[in-house]
Picture 1 (tube, one colour):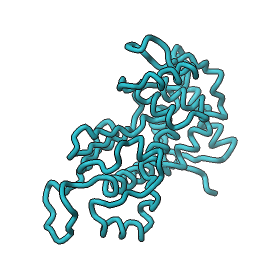
Picture 2 (tube, rainbow, N blue to C red; picture 1 turned 30 degrees about the vertical axis):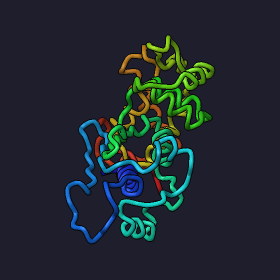
Picture 3 (cartoon, rainbow, N blue to C red; picture 1 turned 135 degrees about the vertical axis):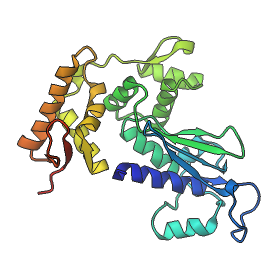
Length: 268
């Protein structure tokens, strides 16, 4: 498992341990039961899914806006141990941190299902849903987290408030009637230079340690002109990699293959 996925998984587990509870008071002397288990899945779509007990904060938005620890935890002894090992924060910002990480990767935000008061389900997306969403995040790094949350709801076709819709319209991020709203995708490819693509690759390598050619293509392809033939898109990506490796000396191919290359940061 890559370092990026491991970091997300640890963050997800720590947030669930801290922010979710089961029914009744906590008593560590009580034997563990299936109802007290946190279940984590890694799907074939590279999405993490986790299930735990009820969600302690009033809402996900409340947890994001107010960086504060919860008044009580599902397992206070486990929380104390994780704090001592620096595995979780002590100011209640873990949920916001997961949202920020996904935003910085141009990926969909964590999806919380807290409709059942005794059950919490969280999905961390590892792949794109809507390429236009990723383009807009890349184009507008100044967007507030609230704006990104609203835009994420549009791409997932989730209910969104009228005020949030009006806000996104004022920023020219969405178009269409309220019932058929969609993310604007008319960002010209000239906005993305080789320098931009190089920085995207470097950020990916800083996060994951090493990545395959296929992973790099998945990252850059959405930002290339949609009418550009696949062969030319691949050539464009090859030029970016050659520039980073041969000219800039910032990355290196650690595989024996050019077609199925694997890249890492050049530390020499």
